[in-house]
Image: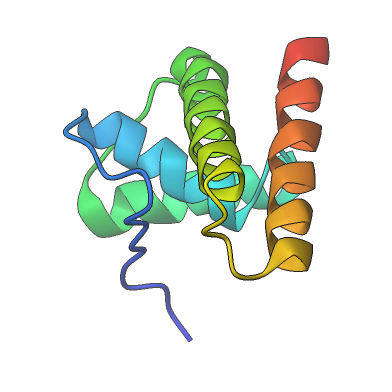
Length: 103
């Protein structure tokens, strides 16, 4: 199959197309460059969005921090409905934030 679109409504906001591309990559690939680089290439080829390599890590960090804060708010308000999945998602976010801060 071929990736035709990525929708992520939990943190929807008006941002640059570069942020959209990196936010999608952050969820689909994480910080794993084996998957990240081909994803960014395919995204650019499919949508015409070229992201400066130096901008990827800061934009990805923004995505992860926003998502983690949003998820914490959901859990604290009692609205997650699936604590195991919420914990898994927050661990993914925190792990990738740690990876980006170590680099």
